[in-house]
Length: 116
Image (cartoon, rainbow, N blue to C red; front, side):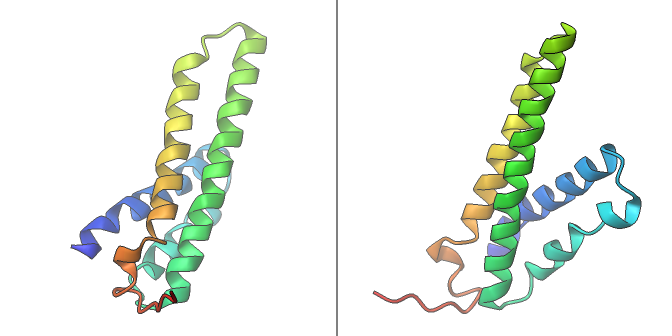
């Protein structure tokens, strides 16, 4: 069941790679987010911490993109609300996927010990 739940963070890493590719990064750079996606299946506590932290940072990149998109479109008089909501939803889903990796449910899978 845990492996099925890991599809959301994997999807977020793939979506972030597509985002990089769309914004002009080369294919080699756009494929880099797939490395942490593979690390999700390594059953070590630092892998989950690393991937969760990267997803939270990627969510801030989505948020920056949403604000930049809204301001640019408003300046040019182009409709901006729908595109901003879509990119903002990408940020929220990416944050959720990142925070999800820190849940207690994943402790057994990633062999983490909690104190207290």
